[in-house]
Image (cartoon, rainbow, N blue to C red; front, side, top):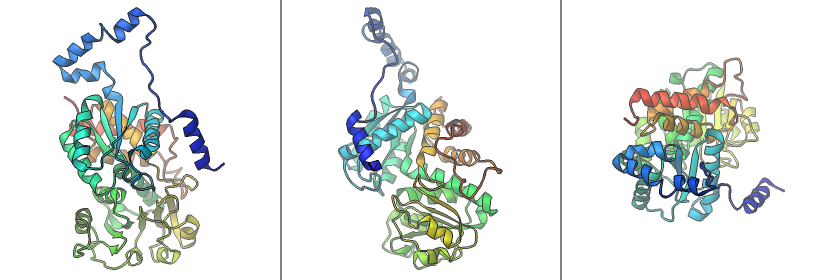
Length: 390
């Protein structure tokens, strides 16, 4: 059986991947009266007098809503709310298995930005955090921005920022290995959608020397009249030398390539134009922008993909469980840039200088150190920046 057949059978056998379990045992009249009526009236009264007490008497502080409208699910596209459920349930079990966070899928039968914002705002009393998932670009930018401003709990679009955190950690370690400094290198990114935009912004925030962004029509240039507002914003912040042309032109003398685009759009000849000791993260799934064996033959030193059957897998599960664990533990009201930056270095530092190699610049998702170190770094950043419940 293929992995797809095995997955389909497992999902049907178990009728999904999540269930609700009770922290309290209800076995007799006394336990029933404590867990429910009449005893439950007392925590209700306490919370009615002080809404913040909900964190003390309910599950809110360890409960995350995994919210999707089904508009950009994996590589499957706009397949709708029901079809997104297996992914959102999967996300919930990753939260639980990696960081002991309770999470619940909220799949919305609307793709209207205003409606999504209003629904999630109305859900705020029940949840301690919101993980946005598989919402198409560019709507995802506005939805996240509005929710961050209007909610006082952490909001995090993992497709954007989880990917950006792991890629950035990989870039930092890749540059350590090839002995190049971040401020002196040029990175080319292909695919300025949700993930690509966040990756570009994070690398700029970390201080990368130069970035060139490409879409399906070539290098982003502020003079182009065919680009969306978020692409124009990227164009104004990147491409210091004013390059024009194709992705192939962009790759000349570049040090890093990051692909979040489409299969086989990069050739060995294009890669051979890059500087020596090049770093390539080709993350299109299931088929990368360039296969590792072709990239290596063209001179690439460090290669990463989105696949688990190659070294250096860019996997969001390395980031989001620890980020949310730290945010919830600190009582954070948001996940800000400083917290994301702290998670980048926490992940990179998992791998010591002696362990670092071409096939090991990103820690394995099952490394037991990751969640604790990321959570600690994120919580400290939240406290330092003051974004915690008073």
